[in-house]
Image 1 (cartoon, rainbow, N blue to C red):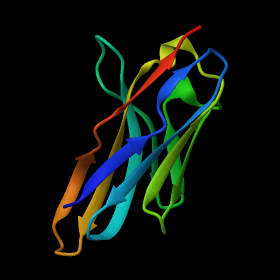
Image 2 (image 1 turned 90 degrees about the vertical axis):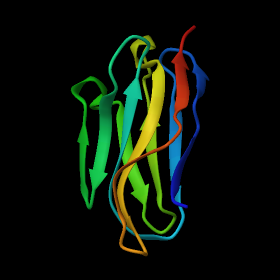
Image 3 (image 1 turned 60 degrees about the vertical axis):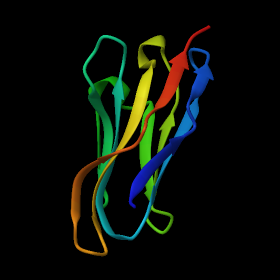
Image 4 (image 1 turned 180 degrees about the vertical axis):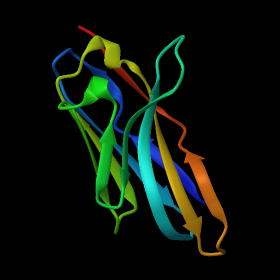
Length: 120
């Protein structure tokens, strides 16, 4: 069974940092892309950052503060979040586009989410 498991969320003061991790497990053949989304209360889920091959993209609201990276050997994607603001408070979800060893495609696999709260 293929799944994504996030970790690293929590409570942090404004200006602080957190690092989220998302590990993919199961009989994975190839991971085409991974990304982080977030959903704040009363708002729609939005893309925060994505990584595909050597390319990354970011939401304008997090550019210069957040960095996405991936360890392909560990099948893990990270989101380093610096200079956090109260408006970054949300549930953060990991997303992956991958293919398992049986050649079944998972174009949008989601993790369970991890809560990030930025508050003093």
